[in-house]
Image (cartoon, rainbow, N blue to C red; front, side, top):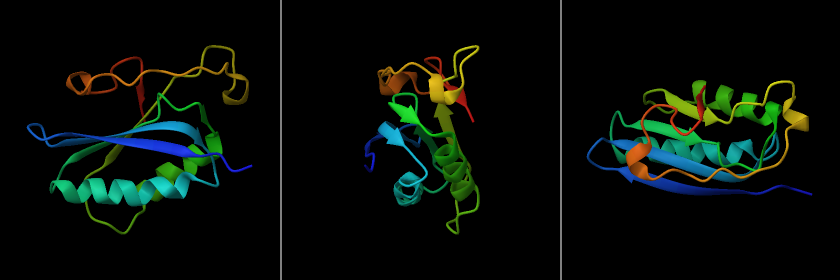
Amino acid sequence: MDQSLSVVVQVEVDTRCVHLVVTGDLTERNHRSLTPLVSRARTLFPGAAVTVDLTGAQHVDPGGLDLLRWSLDHGPEPGGPVQVLTRPVPFGLTEATRPPGRAHAPAPSSWHGAGQGGVAA
């Protein structure tokens, strides 16, 4: 079974920030679907700050997250760094045993830094 992702793009025109709010399951198989979206987000504003927010994802596979970070760091397209936000793993639990839950995406006005318990990667 192939898990799916859903992405909402939030653009803050006045601060030149683009946020990709991701829900669903990030895996090693589907991480590639996010890199073209990040590339498009970078073209909206030259030098725009781009954030990939995975705090609302149902499941984040550690291998998929590593591959996503690698592809964003080594992509051919120009642009500034991309910040990836993830939920912290509760103390004593590994990623695989973390209880399921959905975080709600904060309103665009609260999108500065990690915010809302997110961890900047």
